[in-house]
Image (cartoon, rainbow, N blue to C red; front, top):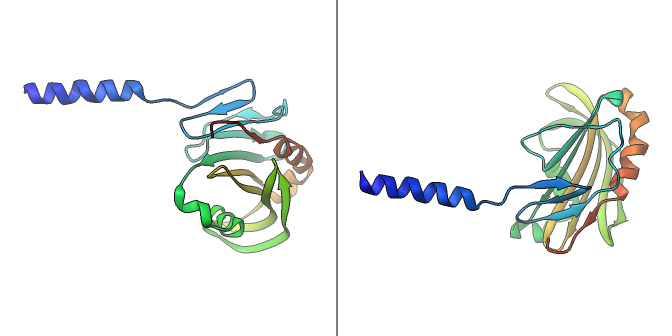
Length: 168
């Protein structure tokens, strides 16, 4: 019993030391990454998505914005095209409108515009993938192909304001 109490006390102590993610004044920080975003469009609302560091819903265009940063040593040698493929894994009948490598936050990023089926439903994707300082960053705009088209310009302007901060 005494041993069990010590383990429980240790578990509480360790969990109290965990650093949680924060997003304030356009800056996201967690244990591994820190990045700054341009102004979030006023008609987007923050939502919680378990697989994203940050997520927003663009209700007017029936689209969602997902932003992730991760630092995994194995990703260091993976080409941007393969990292993009990983993001859209599970989709079928892909039709790419744009596949380009562009300058992005003083590095290169893979930018892809496509339509694909996810669970039989056609979705449109606007995807940016960048590697910087040993980490990979993804910005994705996804939604109904017809409705989100008029929201893509705002997303792309938002994405171009992405900047990795020191300490990532």
